[in-house]
Each structure stands twice: as structure tokens, then as C-alpha cells.
Length: 266
Image (cartoon, one colour):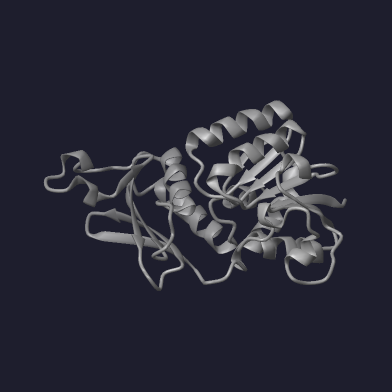
């Protein structure tokens, strides 16, 4: 079965290689693209290359004609509206944009179930990141004490990263975090203990030379276990997982959160 896809953010750092991979795939068709900066152009021309026959639109609602799956790599300000526009048209969604909250995901799950279509959302569509998260969720069943370190480049504006936030929230669903001294009882500067996300402390480092890394540290008396994922400086790690989600989401209903959830369901 051929799947018709729209990529929102198709001229962006991650959206472009995903759109290019869709064009190259035998079972996927890039039906349309969304980019405010390139609206009205052919996508190939917007990329500075040959004509592709793929129209670029300024908004998602204008780009959904004949589309089976919307892939969103835009911004936290736009992704919720884009997702609901797609669901209202019966179009499945793959969300790679970070920054959505647990409440946002609850609303998306409700709307997707009402529409009878699927949404796959992940803070990180890297296959190795998905395996790291799956391992952390397994460990959390047995080791109740944990904290997360979120590493990224100096200019990354959001904190924590979508990967770290998703990990903390997913861990909270598996087991409560055991904290000997609650952060609010810290003497000195409470903010030095990091942000509390779903019961887990998350520490966001923003420094030159980092790209994107997420580490969860579990501990028992006199022993520790760290699970860490490091990404390089290109968007290539996110392409394979996104394509996997595109192929899987038409057969699902409601929200599937986390690429690891999708992988382990197969």
C-alpha cells in the first residue's frame, strides 16, 4: 500500500532529510509540504534543486488534500494546532516536534480516538535512543531512585529537551521515584536540584561541543547504573525511526507515545 505523506517543516534541519527519504522510498509518496518561508514554491526549487512536483503550502490545513499521514517537525507553538487540523480531516500524524506536555498528549490522544485515527509521537525518533529508553523503563521497575541529565548545545532554547521530558514522564508511569530528601527541603539554592518532571529531577546542561545527549542515572546503596544516549551533529539518526512511524501509524488508533512503544508492539 502506498502512503501519501505531508511533511510540515520540510525545509528545516530534520524535516528536509525526512522529506528526501520519503521521496526516495518506493512505498511512500510526498504529496505536499508545509513551510512558511517557501510557501507557493515547488519543494525541489525551495531546496535549491530540481523541480519535484511537490507543492509547498503556508499552513497545514491547506496541505492535507489526498494526504494519509502528516509528519510534523515544526515548533511547539504550531504542532498542537497542526495535529488537531489533521485529526479533524481524518489524517494520521507523526509528531517529531518536542515541547508538548503530558496534558497536550492527553488531549491529542482523546482527539485521535474520537477521530478513529492514529498518532505516533516521540521526543526522539532515533532507533538507538528508543532502545535506551526501553532499557531505562525496564530498569525503573526494579531500581526506584533516579535522576536525568540532559545535555545539549549552548544555543538550544528549550529545557528540558523533548527526549528528557518524555523519558521522565514515561519513567513516572512505570514507578514512583524514591527521593530521600525532597528537593523543596534543600538548603541553599533549591533550583540547583534541577527541575522536577513527573517526580524525577532533570538537569539540563547547555554548553558548546554538545549536540544532544540524554543520561538517566539509577542508584542503589553502594552501586549505580547509567544509561546514556549520544547523538551526533546531523539529523540522520531520526530519519529511519520517522519512516518506521509513518508506515505504522495508519494501522493504529489513538496516541502511541515513544518510538520504543511502537517497536516493542511489533
